[in-house]
Amino acid sequence: MAYDYSDLVEQTKRWAGQAAASGWINQESAKQLCEFDARTPDALFAHSGSRPLIVAFMGGTGVGKSSLLNRLAGQAIARTGVERPTSREVTLYHHRSVAIQHLPEKLPIDRIKIAQHDEESKKNIIWIDMPDFDSTEQSNKQLVLEWLPHIDVLVYVVSPERYRDEKAWRLLLAEGGRHAWLFVLNQWDRGQTAQFEDFKQQLHKAGFDEPIIFKTVCAEELQADEFESLKATIESLATEHVIEQLEQRGLQVRKDDLRQRLQSQMPLLGSSQAVQQTPKLWQEQWQRTADILQQGMVWPIQQLANYYAEHAADLITNPAAGKYSPTRSDIRLWDEWASARFDDSLDEFVLNVDQQGIPVTPLKKQLAPVREKASKIIQGESELAVRQALANPGNVMHRAFLKFMRLCEIVLPLAAIIWVGYKLFTVYYTSNAGNEEYLGVNFAIHSTLLIAITWLTPFFILKKMKPSLEKTALKGLHKGLINGLSMIEYEVSEIIETFNHQHAEQVNQVTDIIEHCKIDNKHRELSRDDKGLLTRMLIE
Image (tube, rainbow, N blue to C red; front, top):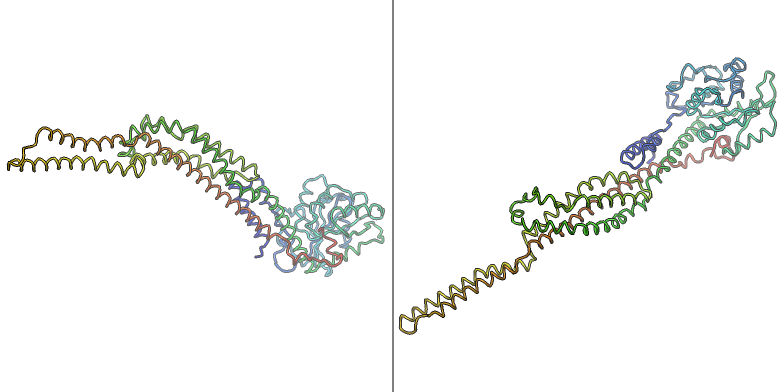
C-alpha cells in the first residue's frame, strides 16, 4: 500500500509520542521525529492543478543578484548599488495572472516587494530575489530559511571575489538535495579562468557531477556573456513535466530525511537478537536469587513452623487466627532482607539488559508492580500451603493407616467385649443345666486383659504414629515458599515476554514506515537521459 508523505509523517509522530511515553525513546529523540518541514512550493497556491516554476536568486552581499533580476525583467524592480548595498527584502517578479494565495505566516508581507509583468514567455515562472544570506542581520538569514522550502530552482550567484563564501556554501551543502541548482559566476569581467575552475571543483565536492555554471557580466555597458543562456535554460524548465519531476524529487528527499531519522532510532531500540536473550538472562539471574532466598529463609521457616504447630487448631478452624498475633507478626518469611535481595536481583537483571543496548525504561515500569506483589505472593502461598498441610498431615498411606487404626480402636475392643459377653452367657447357661462349672477368677482377669489390649494397642499406635505438627507445618512452609517463588518467576517471565512482544511491535512499526519511505522506482529514473539538463542540476 502506498502512503502519502503526510501519512508517513503522522504515523511517525504517533509512534514517537507513544514510544516516548512508554520509554522506548527519550523526549529529545521524539521531538526530532516530530519536527518535519511540510512546506512545499505548491503550498503557495490554492489550486491543485499546474503552477508556475519558482526560481530564486541566492548569494552573498554584492554579488549582483538584484542586478541579474533587473536584467531579466528589463527594468529596475530590485534596488541595487549605492541605494541598497545589501538586500533586506524579498522581491517577487511574476506574470499578472499569477496569484499566490497562501503566503506563510512567517513570511512578513512588509518585507516582500511584488513586481508584475505581461510577458507570455515568462508567464510560468515566478522570479525571486532573496535577501543577502551573509548579512550581519539575523533577520535576513531567517527570511531566506523561511523561503527556501517554497523554491523549485535556486540560482546560486557568486562573484570572483566571493565564490568561496563560507556562509552561503554551508547552506548549499545543507540544502543541496532539496532543490535543483543553477550557478552563476557574475561580474565575470573581473574573473579569471583559474577561479572558474576552482569554483567548479568545489561544486564537484558538493555532489554535482557536471554543474551548470553561467558566466555573466552586469555592468552599465553590456558585454558578451552567457546571460541569455541562463534565461533560456530557466524558461525551458517551466513545464508541467519538469515541475512534476521536481515535486517528486522534493517529496523523495523528504521521505529520505524521514527514513534516515527513523533509521537513526533503530540502534536505540536494541537488536532483536539481544532482546531474545532476555528470558535466558532472567533464568540465570533468578536461579541464583532463588537459591539465596531459600538458604536465607531456613531460620524464619523453622520459627514459623513452631508457631503454626502451637496454633494449629486455631489456624484450621479460624482462618483469620494468627494473622494479627503479636508473636506471628514478628516472624515473616518475606522480610526486609528478602525484599532487598529480590530488588537487587531485579536491578541486576535490568542492568544486564541495559548492557545489551536495549531500552530498559519500559521494563522497569512493568517490573515495579512485582516488587510490591512479591511479599503478598510469598505470604499468601505459605499460609495456604501450611493450612492445607495441617489439615491433612502426613502422606496418603500414612493417613489411610491412621484411619484404619482409629477404626481398630473402636472395633477391636467392641469385638473383645462381645466375645467376653457371649462366653459369659453360654457358660452360665450350661452351668445351670449341671453340665459345667461357672467361670472363675482366671476368666475375669483374662477377659479384662483382652479388652484392654484390644483398646490400648490401636491407641498406642495412633499416639506414636501421629504426624508431628511442627514437621507438617515445616513441610507446608517449604512447599508454600517454592510455590511462591515459582509464581514470582512466572510473573517476571510473563513481563519479559510482554516486553519482548512490545519491542517487536516497536521495531515493526518503525520498519514499516521506513519501508514506505524507500525510493519509488518510477521516480528513480528522474530525467536520467545521458547527462540531461535536470540531472545535472540535482545532487544524487
